[in-house]
Amino acid sequence: MNDHDAPIHEKNSHEFPIHETLGDSLAQQGISRRAFLKFCTAMASLMALPPGTATAIAEALVKAKRPSVIWLSFQECTGCTESLTRSYSPTLENMIFNMISLDYHHTLQAASGYGAEKSREDAMKNFFGKYLLVVDGSIPMNNGGVYSTIAGRTNLDLLHEVAKGAAAIIAVGTCASFGGIPNAKPNPTGAVAVSDIIKDKPIINISGCPPIPAVITGVLAHYLTFGGLPELDDLGRPKSFYGETIHDRCYRRPFYDQGKFAKTFDDEGARNGWCLFELGCKGPVTHNACATTKWNGGTSFPIESGHGCLGCSEPHFWDAGSFYSALSMPASPLKYVAGAAVAGAAAGVAVSIGNRIKKGTAKSAHQKATIEDLEK
Amino acid sequence: MKPQTIPIYTQTEADYSVGNIRALLTEIAARLERLANDGTSASIDLNSLPFAPGEYERLRHALGKGEVSAHIEAIGPSEITETRYPGVWWVTHYNVEGDIVADMLEITTAPEILSSQPDDIRSGLALLHIQLKEEVQQ
Ligand code: SF4
Ligand code: SF4
Image (tube, rainbow over all chains, first blue to last red; front, side):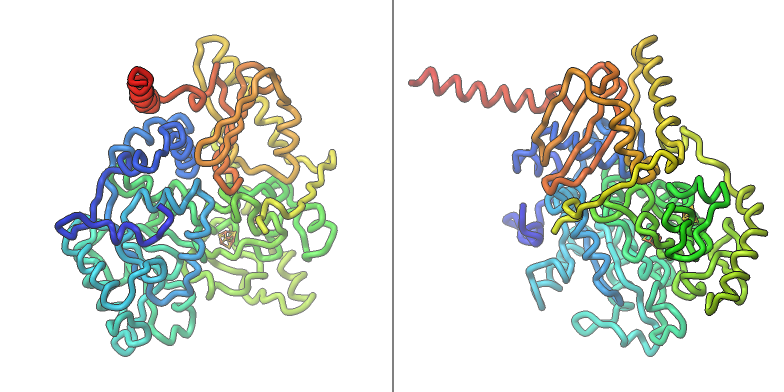
C-alpha cells in the first residue's frame, strides 16, 4: 500500500470499509513472517519490553483486527503529523497504515470537501464505540470556539461529536495533551487540552513538541497487542515512554553526578561534553524518551548536540521561565530559580552559585541507574 | 540528504569515558555464564542504553567479530554477527531507508530471526506444491 488514502476507498459491496486482520493485510502484500518478526522486535524495543517478547507480539498482532482511526487536527502547526510521517519505523508508510484503517485525516487523505466529511461520518456510524480518535492541536474555547473551524464547525463541536463513539482518544502532541503553545500566556483563544473537555473516555497523552514519532506507532502496537491502552502516568502519558526523565537516561549524567557543569556554551566544560544543567537544561523534570529513542532515525538528540532540554513534553513548558535559566530543584515539577533570568554575567554567576548549593540536593534526589535499569 | 550521510566524527579520547562499556561487558559476562551453565538465553537492547559519543564504537571494538555473519533482507536489511565470544551475537535491524530500528546483543546459541518461521514454511510449501504440479504437467 503506498497510498495514504487507500483504506478510505477500500470498500466492499455494502460500501463499508473492509477491516480484515493485520495478518491478512500482511499476507496480501507478501510480507513474510520473518519480516514481521523483525518489525515486532523493533516495536518491543520501542515499548521498552524485554526483547524476547517480539514473538508474542507478532502472534497477537497478526490476529488483531485493524481498528478504524479518525484523526482530527485542531489548533496546531502540523508538526505532529510531520513528525509521524517522517517516522523511522520499518516502512512506516506501510506498517502504520497496515496496523490501522485511517478513515479520516484531513492533511493526509486524498478526499476533500463533502467526500472527506462523509468518510468521517461513515466511519463513525459503522464503528461506533470501536474507533480510535486521534487529536492533534488544542481546542479554543473563547467566543464559542470561533478561532478554529473545520468545514464551518468549531473544533469544540467536532470533538464532542466524534468523541461520543470513540473507544479511546489519543492526544498527540503537547497542544492536544496539555494546551501547548496556543495555551501559552496570554492564551488569546482560550486554548485547552482534550482532557479539559472530554471526561468520560479513556485518553492517552502523547506529549512532546513534536512527540517522538515512534511513540505513536508504539502506542498503536500496544493497543492492538494487548487490546487496551498501556499503563499511564499521572499526566495520562504511557509509562513505557514517559516513565523516566531525560536526565535519568542522559549520557552526560555521570558529569552531573561529579558536579562537572558547562558554564557557557563555548567554555572548556561545554567542549568536554559536561552537564548542561547550569545552562538551563530541563532534563531533570522532563519525562520523555529522547535520550534513548533519539531523533532523525536515531541520529542524536538535543543534549548530544550541546543544547539543554527545553522540557517540551511537560505542561506549560513555554511559560516556565527562560530556557536558559537553571532549574531550582531537579526533582520537582517545572520550577525555576527565582529571578534568574540570565540577563547578564552577574545573574549568570548567581545562578551557578545557587546551583552549587543545590547540587547536594540534586545528588540525593536521584538514584544512580543500575545495569538492570539500563537494560529495561 | 539523510541524517546518516552527514559526516560525524566522534572523539574517542581515552579520558572521555563515562564507564558504560565496562558495566556492559560485566553484564554480558554474567549472561554468558548462565548460557554456558543452564542454556538460558538473554538479550540486551542497545537502543535503550545511554551511550556517550564514541562508546558504541568502543563496544563494537571490544566484542569484535567471530566466525559467523549473516545478512537478512526483510523490509530492509538485518546484519547478524557472532562476536569474538561464541554465544554473543550482535543483531542489527535496519529499515529500507537504512536507519537502525532495533539493535541488540543476543546471548544465545542462535538468534531466533535466523530460523525459518512456521507460517513462512507453510506458505513456501504451498508454493513448492504448485511448482511440482507444473513440473508434472510439462
Ligand atoms: S541536567 Fe541535562 S545535560 Fe545534565 S545530565 Fe541531566 S539531562 Fe543531561
Ligand atoms: S530533549 Fe527535551 S525539549 Fe528536546 S525534544 Fe526531548 S523532551 Fe523535548
